[in-house]
Image 1 (cartoon, rainbow, N blue to C red):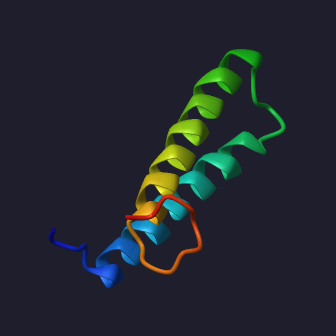
Image 2: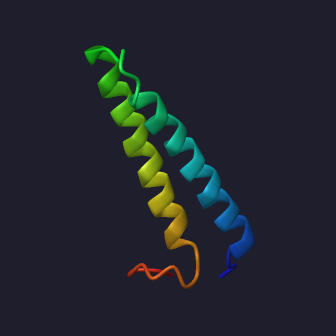
Image 3: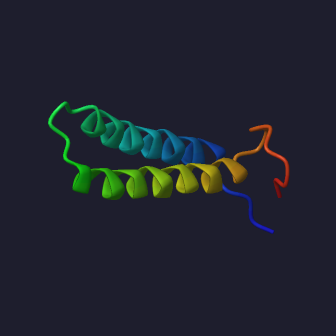
Amino acid sequence: MKWDNPRQVFADVTAALEDVHDIAVQGQSSDLTIDMVAPLAGHIRQGLARIETLMRRLPGAGISGQR
């Protein structure tokens, strides 16, 4: 089994965190409309799922079910 490069996985995790942070900042707008909430929430959910998947590939991240 080929293991992932931990440095690359960590870089991918931090990039995904930045993406979710950008969405969170957009969601803090005082002029956010109701129809903008669902898409932003969906993007946050997708981003968090991506982060979870990446963290499972990172050795020593303390997540049960690591390979």
